[in-house]
Image (cartoon, rainbow, N blue to C red; front, side, top):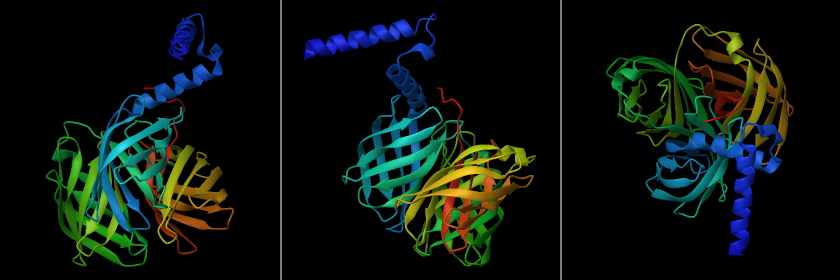
Length: 373
């Protein structure tokens, strides 16, 4: 057996050496070797330390933690913290990426729970988001953000669109906050999908050198939301958990507003992921939009099994990147979106609320055309 394995490795090395020679194009390489090289290159983008946050739709609680992956997408270390108190370690796992940035794979924690992920890596290779579904029928939306260095409070200054979920109340939030160069709130509003509108009255967010965000915001209903989030290396996107003094838990995304955004920025193919807070299940799919923001094709997959197609829809965007519009699927369900496009114009996130009173947080990430390290 050992002799056979050595011969196999030598043969593989010979093939790789032969086809890496300039006279041999990658297209002439045997399909299996070409696929392996492509997957290896794509997986190399996952190397590093990632902050993760997510939701458990059934348990009405949130997660935060960190994982470190090597250049093959293999887990080398990781921790997972529940908003309910327990702390776990990740014991094994592997994430793979295809050439378009689609992420699949799983992570296993010290409670013997395996979470299977279907996500998308953004073109900057710093954010991946999508659904996580466990072997114990726990479903949730997850966001992984690569940690960085040299982050300061100045990076929080500006106007941010926020969106989030209330897992207990089965409703969603959207709003705006403005922070000064010390991370102190100067103004803000918060809108519930159930109708009420609040103002933020006080609050401060802090950030450490790696981009980890902590702090709280208090609204005019005297509710204080405590945040544990991560700022992305581009310093325009932060996501994580928000937990209130009234035991309301949810996943939140903040995106910095920009200027000069046009409908052309929506053109392309987008991976989407989302949650159904009432149904306790998750969504993933793909849509294509033309330069007018009109849907040209799309699919939608439920973690419960059904697969739908998007039949029509249009998204609009204003100069600051705020997204509104709707998509209708083959089950005659129309989802109305209020989202924000990031300054890199590759991620849009916010709330999706249907004509059947289904509410959820959604994240759209533009697909890559060729993912190389």
